[in-house]
Length: 542
Image 1 (cartoon, rainbow, N blue to C red):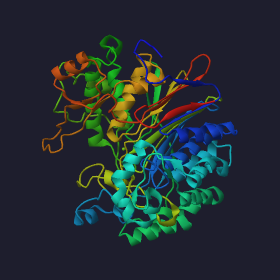
Image 2 (tube, helix red, strand yellow):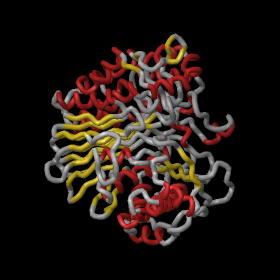
Image 3 (tube, one colour):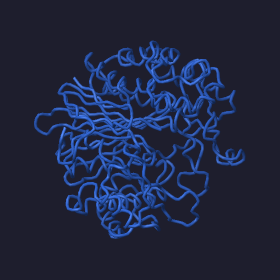
Image 4 (cartoon, rainbow, N blue to C red):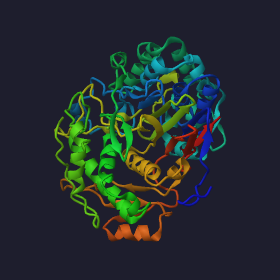
């Protein structure tokens, strides 16, 4: 497929009845299978979500949390569900300081899993099929097994010593204690039983029934802080999306405790410059985006946390007048090192997937168990791999994201939906921690400013600006380390280096993320999808 932007790695996929793009082809097929059985985009999204928890166990599952962003054609509105769980009530800053900090793995890294309740809340309002039908593809994958991809095999090998040491994880994620090689089958029949129980008995089976009791028992046995009461008292909730207008397009994001505001702040600044004159993937346009990113991240570090605990000046952060003031701070010829937060007036491994149906509905979901394979602990005979989301907390006493019992941590997950004149244009997103909003900035501008197709956008050379230097003690100091794929032109790479960026080569396809995108043709309403070739993802349609 040729275009003005070069040859795409794969062609964009087109269809008219329904489409799913996700990080694994079997999960995409689960969503399409659900739509072909009469389900809509929301049914397909939950089917895809459940299947991803099986075939991408490193990235997400019932033991984690997430955000759901929905455009519903019947209402013409974008709505959102926040499925992020809080810290356990016993999780105090003092308790972790006494024990040497928050561990990366193990039961003390586990927060309340909120994802399932978000699925069920969205399904209750918008779903059409019964949960038994929606979960059926995932349950089948659990029972019959699926071939381990090369990517998953590498992850299982890296986690093998931990998995092999625990009987519940050893039975699922190892082959008699050895890493499961690519091509061999992985099954998780206990997780299939758990999904069947939830489909039959609803949310209380997870948050108040046998599953909750089992998670609490595992927590107690492994010196964890998560209790049955933490689970029983949890509820996901509907949220009001935040949005800005970018060159006539309305770009929607999740509100805090998501870090989605960063993308919107970046777009507000970038809008003040002529990107088309600067050029696509040139040193000039990338430099502008990186400098806009630094400004937005500085604001996040100073202001953003759980809005139930901290007064986040989101209106000021997203105002056009504030963006104009921020843009004045950008030197188009030199990379900034000292980047303090601005002063807005007062007025947060993952997987991403998108679904669309013929009625014009769009769904974009980000869900995660935090870093690869979460805590590394399986909750007994439930088959559920628990998250390690507690590792995202700060323990500095005056930091806005400082750990407090029952507070929700700041998240990096941020699904994106774009409308024009009230009609859907695109849905996109990616995993990748703090790189998510950077990749999303590239994706959105690739399509809206430079006319790329979805597959061209997700396949284009990718950059990543690293955050603070590892050992910097200077306030406001940020890293100028810029990771670039080899496929950028020599002029771009040399031009960025001349502006003061410290270039790190990450190979032809070594950039971060597993980006997914669906666009809607403005005249025919055809669905056009692209899935990141850097991972196991595919766009599937019918």
